[in-house]
Length: 393
Length: 158
Image 1 (cartoon, rainbow over the protein chains, first blue to last red):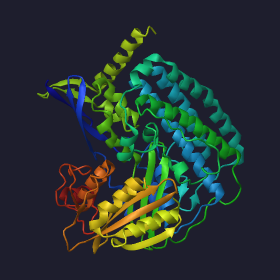
Image 2: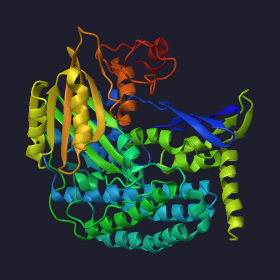
Image 3: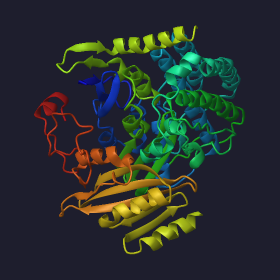
Image 4: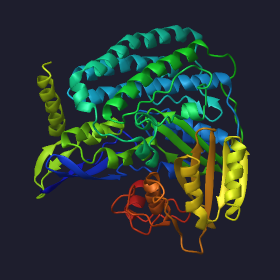
């Protein structure tokens, strides 16, 4: 059978790692996949070496537009790890609140887009409507809908006012019934089951071998979560559960993310209600020579920062590792052998840059364009429609 | 096994290979090893101790290059960083860990292009992050990096 090369990409400047995939397909089946990244390589590691420890926080915040807290969080932990010091309890709680709010809105954004790719535009609208509520909460707490600028080495920049807490809790509570409805909609729908169950499977051994992180690994049965394994901030003082499922397919990744949102709501509420009094900043003056490592659980997995100081006010080396860097290579095992109409959702299931999938284009071996990104989404939606008719819904 | 048993186990098993051992505090340990012993040490930590490979960090420190391999032992909340030093007067090369676990594939490609270190035995050591028109022998994270693009000097004032 003739092999066809399907290029996907190259880039969209939204996320930190825009990708270019080369799928080799035989008919409808994917037989090989290659990935090329770096289209938005901005040299932030080098840039950070020329800024002081305080200034770097703002550069780091702009690595990613969606998870703009996880990078400064990991970076400030790395700088605190050089000394090493522990931040005051109130700062820990506020850091936790901001990080969990970000997890909820990031997972909602993902759920909406996943629904869109599968032809469930109602899910898309509902999820993004809910996301607005959380963004409102974040605006009340930090003054910004995104890029909160709350973090600094040694503490946080802005305190939470006591009178803001009841309205935040009301808003957070208001999303829970709809989240549960979405969970029920996903778990009850036979069409969605047919579309996502058994698709793009990654086994536990493969997840460990490829060092997959976050919800991607937890859907494969690897109980791996930085918040539980090496507790930081207030995660060891509040009550929450790690969500682990065992099938490793797209369906499980959806379920893990929806259930995780409910856990995040739990964490956020507990932190807001039990916010301790006291200082919010240690006012660190000097960073001694040494090395520090900071890692936090971002919505997509572990964010890892390494900072090396020589005693001046600038880092000698600052290494940034985003979770997608470890999750992207899992395509090697999830995509091969699957149908091309499933590629969109498998590629979306680890929560990378969706924008890439929007720029998909199918070409035959002479280079003539056959399909583009919109066509592929239509292809994916048409398949759901077929299944829907089959199940008589 | 508790923390002390695990660390003693590493120290006893690789007595000859360990050059330096630094116990920073209860969550971080730095172990410097000879570069020939990288594969056995890393495989032991990854496979036998069931650690998670976080990432590797390559640094240019003027007189030598340094690669740190970070591993997290999730059960006991300990991060073990294995340090390997590569003197600059010798060829910059080290064994690839991809034969032990596939998770090290991409980071070795990244270090290869950023610092110019050759990973022996890597199956696919091609470009990952830098642009296609970037020269082969220019490595942006080296100390002696010079702006090579005359256009960049004119346009951005670098």
